[in-house]
Image (cartoon, rainbow, N blue to C red):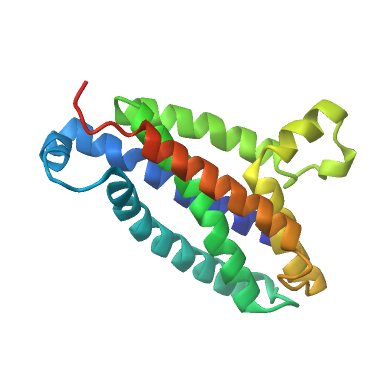
Length: 194
Protein backbone atom coordinates (compact mmCIF):
# COMPACT_ATOMS: atom_id res chain seq x y z
CA UNK A 1 0.00 0.00 0.00
CA UNK A 2 2.81 2.46 0.79
CA UNK A 3 4.11 2.81 -2.80
CA UNK A 4 0.53 3.17 -4.06
CA UNK A 5 -0.24 5.85 -1.48
CA UNK A 6 2.95 7.63 -2.54
CA UNK A 7 1.65 7.63 -6.14
CA UNK A 8 -1.69 9.10 -5.05
CA UNK A 9 0.10 11.76 -2.97
CA UNK A 10 2.05 12.84 -6.05
CA UNK A 11 -1.16 12.83 -8.09
CA UNK A 12 -2.96 15.03 -5.57
CA UNK A 13 -0.12 17.53 -5.29
CA UNK A 14 0.21 17.75 -9.04
CA UNK A 15 -3.41 17.94 -10.10
CA UNK A 16 -4.92 20.05 -7.30
CA UNK A 17 -2.22 22.71 -7.12
CA UNK A 18 -1.93 23.05 -10.88
CA UNK A 19 -5.73 23.16 -11.27
CA UNK A 20 -5.96 26.13 -8.94
CA UNK A 21 -3.05 28.02 -10.47
CA UNK A 22 -4.35 29.85 -13.55
CA UNK A 23 -7.84 30.11 -12.06
CA UNK A 24 -6.51 32.06 -9.08
CA UNK A 25 -4.93 34.51 -11.51
CA UNK A 26 -8.24 34.82 -13.36
CA UNK A 27 -10.06 35.58 -10.11
CA UNK A 28 -7.36 37.97 -8.94
CA UNK A 29 -7.39 39.90 -12.21
CA UNK A 30 -3.67 39.43 -12.85
CA UNK A 31 -4.29 37.20 -15.87
CA UNK A 32 -5.14 40.25 -17.99
CA UNK A 33 -1.77 41.79 -17.18
CA UNK A 34 -0.03 38.56 -18.17
CA UNK A 35 -2.07 38.32 -21.37
CA UNK A 36 -0.86 41.69 -22.69
CA UNK A 37 2.79 40.69 -22.35
CA UNK A 38 4.53 39.22 -25.41
CA UNK A 39 5.01 35.85 -23.68
CA UNK A 40 3.94 32.84 -25.76
CA UNK A 41 1.23 30.46 -24.54
CA UNK A 42 3.66 27.53 -24.30
CA UNK A 43 6.12 29.52 -22.23
CA UNK A 44 3.34 30.68 -19.93
CA UNK A 45 2.13 27.11 -19.33
CA UNK A 46 5.74 25.94 -18.85
CA UNK A 47 6.28 28.69 -16.27
CA UNK A 48 3.22 27.48 -14.40
CA UNK A 49 4.32 23.85 -14.64
CA UNK A 50 7.94 23.97 -13.44
CA UNK A 51 7.41 25.13 -9.81
CA UNK A 52 4.79 22.45 -9.16
CA UNK A 53 6.96 19.85 -10.88
CA UNK A 54 9.78 20.64 -8.44
CA UNK A 55 7.32 20.63 -5.53
CA UNK A 56 6.01 17.23 -6.65
CA UNK A 57 9.53 15.77 -6.75
CA UNK A 58 10.14 17.10 -3.24
CA UNK A 59 6.91 15.43 -2.07
CA UNK A 60 8.08 12.12 -3.60
CA UNK A 61 11.34 12.42 -1.68
CA UNK A 62 9.52 13.20 1.56
CA UNK A 63 7.14 10.28 0.95
CA UNK A 64 10.04 7.87 0.49
CA UNK A 65 11.63 9.06 3.74
CA UNK A 66 8.33 8.82 5.64
CA UNK A 67 7.73 5.32 4.23
CA UNK A 68 11.14 4.27 5.52
CA UNK A 69 10.93 5.97 8.93
CA UNK A 70 7.38 4.85 9.79
CA UNK A 71 7.05 1.53 7.93
CA UNK A 72 10.67 0.53 7.41
CA UNK A 73 10.00 0.17 3.69
CA UNK A 74 12.92 0.97 1.41
CA UNK A 75 12.82 0.48 -2.37
CA UNK A 76 14.44 -2.71 -3.68
CA UNK A 77 15.19 -0.85 -6.91
CA UNK A 78 17.01 2.38 -7.60
CA UNK A 79 15.92 5.68 -6.08
CA UNK A 80 16.95 7.29 -9.35
CA UNK A 81 14.44 5.08 -11.19
CA UNK A 82 11.68 6.27 -8.86
CA UNK A 83 12.63 9.92 -9.33
CA UNK A 84 12.86 9.66 -13.13
CA UNK A 85 9.51 7.87 -13.39
CA UNK A 86 7.97 10.36 -10.92
CA UNK A 87 9.32 13.29 -12.95
CA UNK A 88 7.65 11.96 -16.11
CA UNK A 89 4.44 11.13 -14.27
CA UNK A 90 4.32 14.57 -12.68
CA UNK A 91 4.39 16.13 -16.15
CA UNK A 92 1.24 14.14 -16.98
CA UNK A 93 -0.76 15.04 -13.85
CA UNK A 94 0.39 18.65 -13.96
CA UNK A 95 -0.83 18.77 -17.54
CA UNK A 96 -4.23 17.52 -16.37
CA UNK A 97 -4.30 20.15 -13.62
CA UNK A 98 -3.29 22.93 -15.99
CA UNK A 99 -5.92 21.81 -18.51
CA UNK A 100 -8.56 21.99 -15.76
CA UNK A 101 -7.22 25.42 -14.82
CA UNK A 102 -7.56 26.74 -18.37
CA UNK A 103 -11.16 25.52 -18.56
CA UNK A 104 -12.46 26.51 -15.12
CA UNK A 105 -13.76 29.99 -14.32
CA UNK A 106 -13.46 29.83 -10.53
CA UNK A 107 -11.39 28.05 -7.90
CA UNK A 108 -14.48 26.21 -6.67
CA UNK A 109 -15.17 24.88 -10.15
CA UNK A 110 -11.53 23.82 -10.58
CA UNK A 111 -11.52 22.12 -7.17
CA UNK A 112 -14.71 20.16 -7.89
CA UNK A 113 -13.48 19.00 -11.30
CA UNK A 114 -10.07 18.03 -9.89
CA UNK A 115 -11.77 16.22 -6.97
CA UNK A 116 -13.99 14.22 -9.34
CA UNK A 117 -11.03 13.27 -11.53
CA UNK A 118 -9.03 12.35 -8.41
CA UNK A 119 -11.78 9.94 -7.31
CA UNK A 120 -11.66 8.19 -10.68
CA UNK A 121 -7.86 8.08 -10.48
CA UNK A 122 -7.91 6.52 -7.02
CA UNK A 123 -10.71 4.03 -7.59
CA UNK A 124 -9.66 2.91 -11.08
CA UNK A 125 -5.88 3.15 -10.76
CA UNK A 126 -5.24 -0.22 -9.16
CA UNK A 127 -4.47 1.13 -5.70
CA UNK A 128 -7.17 -0.84 -3.88
CA UNK A 129 -8.29 -3.32 -6.53
CA UNK A 130 -5.78 -4.93 -8.89
CA UNK A 131 -6.50 -3.97 -12.49
CA UNK A 132 -6.32 -7.67 -13.47
CA UNK A 133 -9.33 -8.51 -11.25
CA UNK A 134 -11.50 -5.66 -12.57
CA UNK A 135 -14.32 -6.32 -15.05
CA UNK A 136 -13.54 -5.62 -18.71
CA UNK A 137 -15.21 -2.18 -18.77
CA UNK A 138 -13.21 -1.10 -15.72
CA UNK A 139 -9.96 -2.33 -17.27
CA UNK A 140 -10.56 -0.05 -20.24
CA UNK A 141 -11.01 2.89 -17.89
CA UNK A 142 -7.87 1.86 -16.00
CA UNK A 143 -5.91 1.80 -19.27
CA UNK A 144 -6.90 5.45 -19.83
CA UNK A 145 -5.93 6.36 -16.28
CA UNK A 146 -2.37 7.76 -15.82
CA UNK A 147 -2.04 6.66 -12.15
CA UNK A 148 -2.51 3.02 -13.22
CA UNK A 149 0.91 3.01 -14.86
CA UNK A 150 2.67 4.94 -12.11
CA UNK A 151 1.19 2.83 -9.30
CA UNK A 152 2.23 -0.36 -11.10
CA UNK A 153 5.67 1.07 -11.83
CA UNK A 154 6.43 2.37 -8.35
CA UNK A 155 5.25 -0.90 -6.78
CA UNK A 156 7.52 -2.83 -9.16
CA UNK A 157 10.51 -0.66 -8.24
CA UNK A 158 9.75 -0.84 -4.52
CA UNK A 159 8.90 -4.52 -4.19
CA UNK A 160 10.70 -6.28 -7.06
CA UNK A 161 13.62 -3.96 -7.78
CA UNK A 162 12.52 -3.30 -11.38
CA UNK A 163 14.62 -1.03 -13.54
CA UNK A 164 13.45 1.69 -15.92
CA UNK A 165 14.07 -0.72 -18.79
CA UNK A 166 11.68 -3.23 -17.20
CA UNK A 167 9.05 -0.49 -16.98
CA UNK A 168 9.70 1.02 -20.41
CA UNK A 169 6.14 0.50 -21.71
CA UNK A 170 4.60 2.13 -18.62
CA UNK A 171 7.04 5.03 -18.96
CA UNK A 172 6.31 5.49 -22.68
CA UNK A 173 2.55 5.49 -22.03
CA UNK A 174 2.99 7.97 -19.17
CA UNK A 175 5.12 10.18 -21.41
CA UNK A 176 2.35 10.03 -24.00
CA UNK A 177 -0.15 11.22 -21.38
CA UNK A 178 2.23 14.06 -20.43
CA UNK A 179 2.60 15.28 -24.02
CA UNK A 180 -1.14 14.94 -24.71
CA UNK A 181 -2.41 16.79 -21.63
CA UNK A 182 0.19 19.56 -21.72
CA UNK A 183 -0.44 20.13 -25.43
CA UNK A 184 -4.17 20.33 -24.70
CA UNK A 185 -3.50 22.83 -21.90
CA UNK A 186 -1.43 25.03 -24.21
CA UNK A 187 -4.03 24.86 -26.99
CA UNK A 188 -6.92 25.51 -24.59
CA UNK A 189 -5.30 28.54 -22.93
CA UNK A 190 -6.58 31.74 -24.50
CA UNK A 191 -4.61 34.94 -24.19
CA UNK A 192 -7.72 36.98 -24.86
CA UNK A 193 -10.18 37.54 -22.05
CA UNK A 194 -13.59 36.09 -22.66
